[in-house]
Length: 202
Image (tube, rainbow, N blue to C red):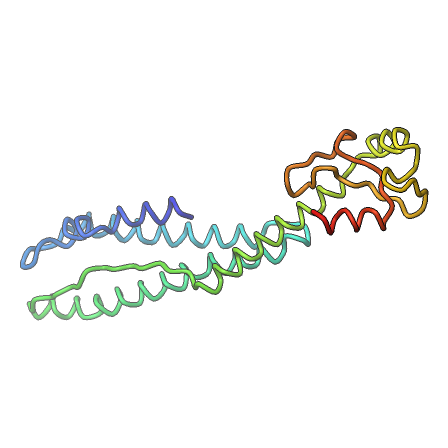
């Protein structure tokens, strides 16, 4: 979407408008006005396409909320664009009669501001952060079966602290949150009690 918006900024710049509509008191250039209108409507078509693609994508359930928020983000420029077109139409409504009556016509600059609601942006940031935390937790749990077997054999199926064989857990020596890996060198067997005690000391 960003390239489309940046392209529109160039196409409806004050200089582009001046070349199309002329300086005050000058006649406009029909071909440039048509090209400017085509550019504007082309941008609208691109926005519609982006919005449609966002809604047509089949996403896993865990990404559905993020997809819906992205859809809201795409809707905002569409609504603002429609308001922009309404303002243009209001300006141009009186042009045909003014031309017939040979009255001067004053057109104001075409200003199109795109802004996405800050609440939508904040929900987008929160959802990205939630998915990142969920991914981190999922990766933490994804110790392979072969690594588990290797750790079990090495630690002889006992807690490395107290020797218990009850309620054993696979514990990271260097915590995953601090860059610890899921390799056998970084994992030990600990009973639940010793693991909680170690966790409280980190």
